[in-house]
Image (cartoon, rainbow, N blue to C red; front, top):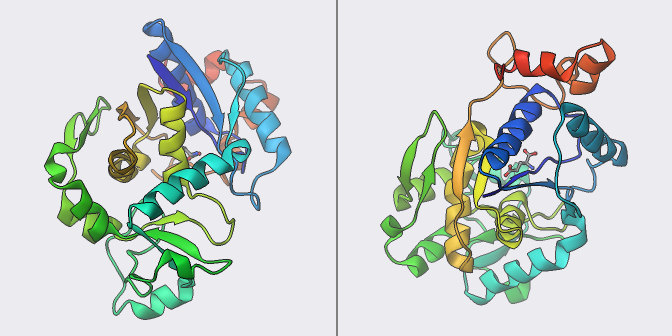
Length: 282
Ligand code: GLU
């Protein structure tokens, strides 16, 4: 078994990250497997070196050990570009110059179906533009209809989840993919690099990850990842989407919740055992 923890160095790690990292680390250890750390640092505007240093420090403090060298996504941008080129050669991408405001204006009504934090389902304004017409600053989107057509029967595409909330085998539904995901962004115009979904599938395959352990907030994103794996001919890991750590009001912890940053607890004298206790890990 090979698991990983893949934080973005855009803030300090909080209790939710600790739960994720400890769960992935302990699953690997129980199976005499390997645990890897991956730094997802493609979003240059938000990444800061002190956050990356703090990730190493906080994880080590928790007692977590990982294999080296650590993969940093910013060192592998050409690999994500190669994956994007492959998809483009397959005819399932198009360049898109729409701004968020354009997209909002093109949507007749506010959308209910919002996928994996990427905003509303794209109304398709730029669909059909050839990649040869891509201009500097254009984003690249997946043409969902074409992608689904290319894959034939999506019912053969699924993934296994061993997490508490979504335990079982999950199959891709074309209608759900069209209505809830739509033409997702594969490469972002603001950072000129592969978006999260593409880089994560490339790296999980490159690193030989057999079991992806991460929060249940990414459960829906896994359908996107399964689709991209099928298009790119990459293996599909098993998934374990774990419960989310929430604040007192029931909200999922976010990076801005500094009050729950691990270093804050540490500064106040908490021990790694206290953190485990708070997380219900005993
Ligand atoms: N980098 C993502 C995050 O910090 C997690 C990626 C993953 O586990 O797939 O939320």
